[in-house]
Image (cartoon, rainbow, N blue to C red):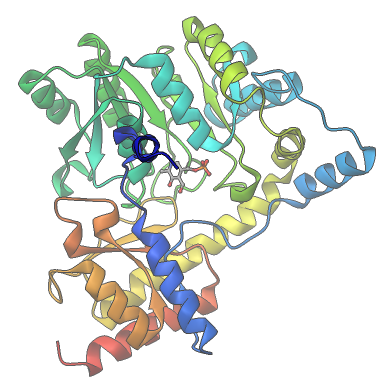
Amino acid sequence: MLEAAKHLLIPSKRSNVPPFIVMDVMAAAAQLEAQGRRVVHMEVGQPAAPAPATALHAAQAALVHGRLGYTEALGIPSLRARIARHYADSYDLALDPARVVVTTGSSGGFILAFLALFEAGDRVALANPGYPPYRHILSALGCEPVLIETSADTRWAVTAKSLIAAHRSRPLQGVLIASPANPTGTMMDADALARLIAVAEAEGIKVISDEIYHGLDYAFAAETAANVSEQAMVINSFSKYYCMTGWRIGWMVVPDALVRPIERLQQNLAISVPTIAQIAAEAAFDGRAEMEAVKHGYEENRRILTQGLPKAGLDQFLPVDGAFYLYANIARFSDDSLDFAKRMLNEAGVAATPGIDFDPIDGRHFLRFCYAGSAAEMHEAVERIGNWLNSAPR
Ligand SMILES: Cc1ncc(COP(=O)(O)O)c(C=O)c1O
């Protein structure tokens, strides 16, 4: 190879995004299991249950039928109409199906939303702690993620006040909110959501609402940003409530003016979303009774952890409002959540994700537990953590 050609292989600056540390915990857990050790998995944020039977049957039938071609870039019309009906059923909102865009998971939705809303160099506010790909996708697209610190006083969410303070110090072009949130599992109530959106819009700050954990709310019902403003960009997914992570299918509710630009982006970036996943997703809406049973399982898991962990020694955690996460403060035991997570895995056989994945500022004091497994696993985790914290000198 020509010496000069080697320079061509230097990765672009924009591709230099940090890794997802939870993947390292998964790899370490898999190594222990290969050695015959038992591990309770609470590190990965995905349901243990399969997609609803209705979705599986629809996909099987589509395979038997044979041909799976491209679909319309914005999604199969009947699926878009079915998603719009979901807003009438769940949020009492009459939504025009023309504003619904089908995406490859909410992950595909973020790329479309950020490209449609922002120029390179735009500044977008995010809650800290938060889901790491928000900031990594923004950076890869040349935008600047601006982390806004949250605290117990504001239920760990960006507020109208903290947004304005950040905007006054240097102007923002966007804000991304999530309720229920990952990793905290906390939620914004309808008033907090409405106040934030009103202030953002008055200041010309575009709002994106990640509603991927809607349906998994235990403390109070989650409100959609689509009910607050027609200008808000809503992102959702079949991954969590419908247990369809691997199907890679989600949707957006888009302001009228952005439908066509997003259609053009989707045509060029993806052509269309996998057809079999769209067919399965439409049928998934008929499987809600099955998914409600799965949700009741999470509620039971939440009860086991919120009652059991304090007795085991982990007695400080954020309000466990929704999603399937419990975010525990481990500052009493360690200043290094990565080391704590590694030791808890090796010595207690419980895998959880260190907070540094979600919070570059104070994540060393936190661990995220995913409680999407079985009740038996939750009991086992509580017992193992209790024995470990009470036996080892720390
Ligand atoms: C808050 C949040 N948003 C988005 C995603 C991406 O999900 P998907 O692309 O599977 O819809 C996740 C996945 O864990 C998440 O936790």
